[in-house]
Image (tube, rainbow, N blue to C red):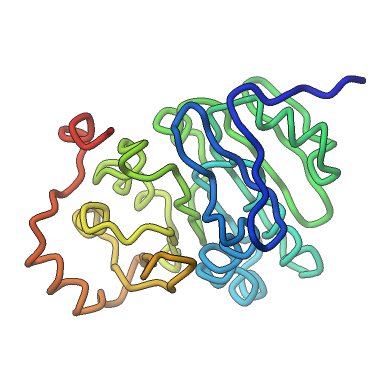
Length: 248
């Protein structure tokens, strides 16, 4: 069987040897070129403390905003495949060609079955659901009681509607009280949006050329230096009303 060629994306190799891609639609790489796999582990698997928390919670429910080239699924599966806990992993993806590419090229995705609009499969303790379509619409079909959220959408300048206060409101409503939401972004506008949606904001790690990232929680206290910075910052709070102007 001839494999489907990617039309909307160009595959690229990152410095740690793992593959990423460039989106022709959004004009942006999926990952930091320092390393797709290492960035994913740092920001999401480690950033959401998945391994240690999944040992204490079963099932452990994860939402990923943007399947991309499947690196989030792969790295999470590899980290959790030997745990006793059940991992329920839901990911949002707008471009079906990426799903077909993964099904044809990666053994982890070979058993994906399309049911209605969605793709599903199970491998051992790992249950994967890919919600195909506009994330702002499909989020209503996501499970609740989320323990971890990988906020890995294209940047606010490229896809502002997945970074607004209203978007973070919705994620907040789906989260368990112990949920950790992690993202590569440290934008003042999105941090303001998270705060207005009720999230507690703390500084995440530096990765590659980025000086910081963001971790968000349902309870506790925000980092005071972030709060003081945001009070001084002229950056707007990103909302559905101003997203069109913010978007490039």
